[in-house]
Image (cartoon, rainbow, N blue to C red; front, side, top):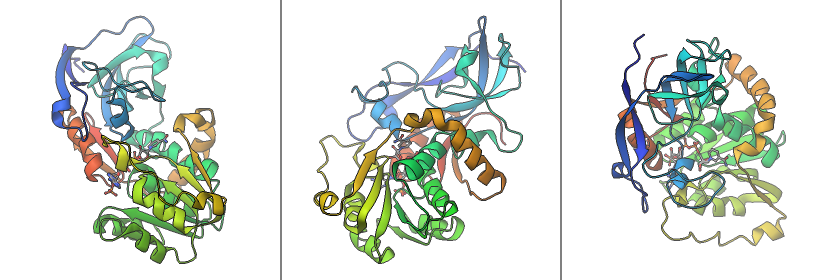
Length: 340
Ligand code: NDP
């Protein structure tokens, strides 16, 4: 194949205040480098857009450094090696990396992880067999310590992480799985395609009332992707010694003022609740454990994986902004090259 002299990448143009807009991004034509000794050149096939990237657009110290203005939005991507000066990777290999929103990525071969696409599409390494899958797996089973027979509630349930939390919970013996999402279509998806026992549309009525109705006997585990009124509702419904996995709080990512805390936090004392935050990389050393079990479920067709796919590098900002409008069901991705 012909490698072009230049290709497009997406830079952070400015830092947003509140909800980002397309003005915060710029499309830049940059030279495609020749790989140096020990390096590879990769043509990206899929880019991942993720809610955590919103935090990186701010200039604040956190668990991951902020994006630099005028630099590429880095993040998860999968692609095909098109030139190699390394013994570790060959032309045609499919690789996972973190070089982000660009058509071509180049760097030392050790920054690119070879993935096996004989049984699953490459995009799976950005969803069920990648970061969202690992977040769901360890968040549910380690952080929230879900046990067979538990009743589990997950918010953001039709998204990349949430849709897997519900399915993993069922596969590991949860008695009842309840999900919330932002539309009637998503609620049907949870109930009819993913096998949730109950689901509700948080936009159609108060979360507290809808959760109480869906969980008449209370819940043992809450997997929190959104924070806000969902967290309050879960605190009310949790049984004594219940556990919360604090995974995300997307209701707050675009706030310009600190959000108020849950008004009923004292319930954590009276019910002896455990609330534990985590970052998926806390479990990096246990990736093998996650892949062993989840790959088996995927191979046996026991996990349903949905993707919402935008096309072309120029659509990455819209795909990203769509996360905050609920435009995705399952994993939000941007497809650049191949179609499978
Ligand atoms: P999703 O695929 O779930 O996409 C985001 C979803 O959030 C949207 O589809 C939308 O669905 C929902 N949403 C957007 N705004 C709101 C709102 N104001 N209130 C309620 N729901 C909203 O993203 P991911 O699965 O990638 O991430 C889910 C959560 O997990 C995020 O909070 C993310 O930051 C966190 N996360 C944490 C990790 C960690 O290591 N701790 C790792 C990965 C993710 P809807 O239509 O239902 O509103």
